[in-house]
Image (cartoon, rainbow over the protein chains, first blue to last red):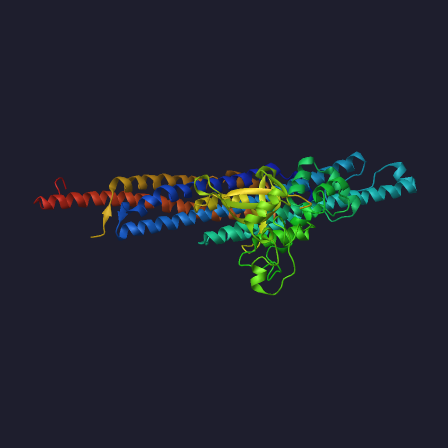
Length: 418
Length: 103
């Protein structure tokens, strides 16, 4: 458990440096992996050294390259956990400092054990009405202090469990497992750590907590966990409205729904072998996006009842192509929304991957997912079938490049009215 | 021996590259100063303690990979020397000598 004194004195910059250090290990090790992969392996595999010894050397090189790639990924996983912890500790510490500042300015003493006392004034001792208001205020301050300490404790415990797990992964031999399980769960945890700083107190405590946060912390929370704030009593109405967005489409609600259903088994939208775009459309619909057009319209986004006839259901009889197929979805939402840069991405946007066409020709949009969070400029997306929740675009991109992937990413902000 | 073929210059360069890569990886395994300081400065924080275990375990594994890469580079250099020596020996034998001149 983190004590009030520990949280107050915590060196947040040191945690940030720790996260940066592990991220640098990831970057530098991955650079060596690229070097071995791109410059040494091709020379040996092209026949520079043949025969049993040469083949053994090549096999050994590949084993070492894979091992090093896993090292890089595990360092990335640790850095993601530390990044989330840094945010959580900073937000908690700022909440605590705000509460301590308020207590000091209002004359409420706070012991080292974190207990808030009554002001030692004649008025507080002799005026029953004033004493009653002081008790209410003391209770609020105590709640704010406790919220901050609790948030730091929860973050510490969650990070402890994950770091303990990562410390024991040194037997890993499978790159995909390191990426999808360890980096994937660390990326998810980073968001969870930030979201865990949002208190569940009453409206007064929430309002005081929010008002006491620096703008950069408020922005971190808006982008990482909008769904935790949108319906929380005490968060200012203008903030909640911005998180929702204009029109019927609830942007924060979309992120929440996607995060809640990313790995549903036998979901209603599991129609095809790959339902990534079906999942995106289901998310939009669940978040209030209105269907557009119908069967006879060439520019539509809709889903009708399933006929039960697989041929009809799979071949466009029950939904528009834009509902279930990535290229058509990209085309539809680009025309009924706005394509933004990756720097401008926000939760509630749609992200598409396109393999560029040869010689600058038309590319192939082959995958889509929901943007469910953004942390320090890194897009986190959630997808179905190749199940991922709050996966880090920044963490996965360089690994994809190692395998020869050079996809272009598009981020589209769907228009609320379709 | 029919399948054996070695291009000394290429394999030598690969060996050089592996030696440099191994050294770079070794350096990565040692440079966790910030993490050590972080753990030392937060003795009562559970995640700081576990982070230090992470550092030790992964530092060891990274170092072992650095060593492995460097050794592979050494082996490539060794193979080139051996190949060149064997080539010279065979050439000498083919010229009628019983041993390589200078050996």
